Length: 135
Image (cartoon, rainbow, N blue to C red; front, side):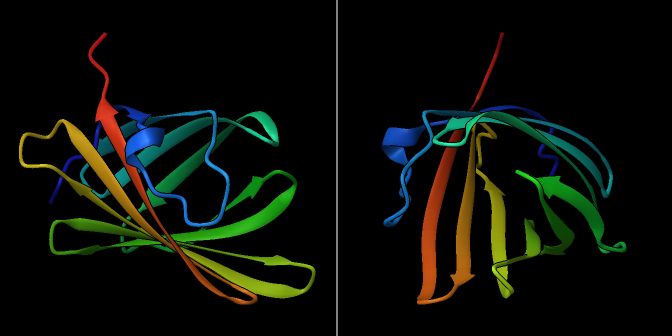
């Protein structure tokens, strides 16, 4: 099992966002104990400065959160050393799925999140690269 604990700062210039606009900044704080993760994401983008907190129970029941006023259901599972996080929600009555696949570099200094967003008009693929903060 991979331990993703730490402070992770998004590297926008090294990331790929498809046709979607990149955020101005993003910082993820991850506290992990075994299969239990608490993730606080602070992101500055076109929607303002927002923080979302998620409680992931790997292979446990889905958890419910709100992001920008919309309900979302989140589930997670291990796939080898990768953590796969699926987020389901609706926009204008249409189902959406975001699948994030988390992995760490061998030196544990880089977090990669390979993202697939299923939406009307097809899938969008993104690669979010983060650097571990040492303050």
